[in-house]
Amino acid sequence: MRKKNFGRIAILNLIIAVVIGSVLTLAYPRSWQFNFLTAFIFSNCIGFSIHTLVHLLQSRLERFPTTLRRALLVVLFLIGGSIGTEVGYWVSRALFGNIIYFPAHISLLLFNLVMAIIFGSIAVLYFSLKQSAEKMAIMLKEKELQEERLTRSKVKAELDALQSKINPHFLFNTLNSIASLISENPRKAEAMVEKLSELFRYTLQTSQKDTIKLSEELEIVRSYLEIEKTRLGDRLTFHIECDSVLAEELFLPGLLIQPLVENSIRHGIAPKIGGGEVTVEAKRVENACVISVIDNGIGFSNKNASSGYALKSIQDRLKLLYDGKAELKIIHSDGTHVIITIPFSHG
Image (tube, rainbow, N blue to C red; front, top):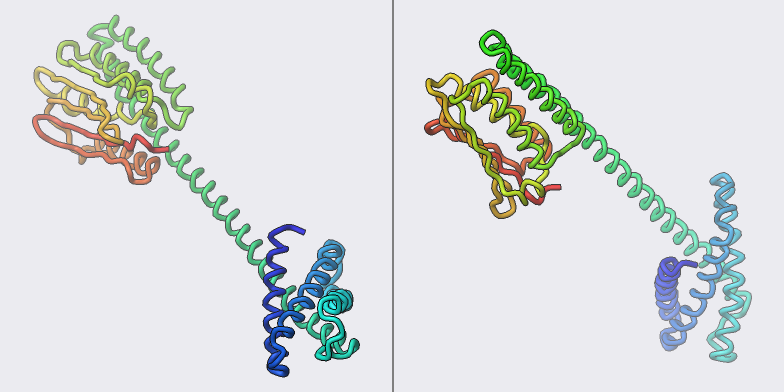
């Protein structure tokens, strides 16, 4: 018998003893101590006898139909009541001897059998309801876990969908850059194709992961900037600044920074006479990583079709992956300053 069940039966027996002892005290008020003590002895002897029988035969009882099982339980209550009564009777006699307050043996047995059926039925009903409640709780827990798994699968599918949209977008813009060089400088165009091949080999590897290191993302950004530097020449300068420890510690979704850099060049630097500068910074501020993409171009508006799409995609991915704890902010002042704040302790 498990300790947990033993404790529950002991508490139930104590409640029964108090009830029966109180009833007997109403009939025999002068013998209240005796009433409660004998009620305690008999309730425990009968209660544990019934529980032991039910526990031993429980697996077999479950094979029968409900009506027959209930009938068999009543039989077990009667048997357990009889055994418990005999044990309690001899324990009481050993403690008190032949005291006049004891009823006749047959009357005692009949009384205890009635109590055994009543309180045994109550106990079975209680434990049955409790078992049903526990099963229901387990089922609800399993349902919650299943819903959580489905939610995670949905989030991953949405992230993959957003990722797949960004990759062709990046390819389209880069191919346009290469096309513009084919007639002007074939060698540079060839070099750009080679760099693009290396870049996409790298992005295909990282796209298989949910998140990548910040250092890997910055490597993608550097490769893209070098491709654009080949096209724009002196009209483009760029800087990437990040602490080496932070770059290895922080994980983030792939191609999160690159679309921002692409927007800066395509809509800010390229249209500007004389070109401009792009700076990518990443630093730790308390428990968050602050990533900035800064350019001194003519500025781009999130109302622009391509830039707006990139910003919307990044915002959606941040929301899905960080549960609203990440932030994207845009500052327009002598160019464009885009700030992404990612909680460092996420995941």
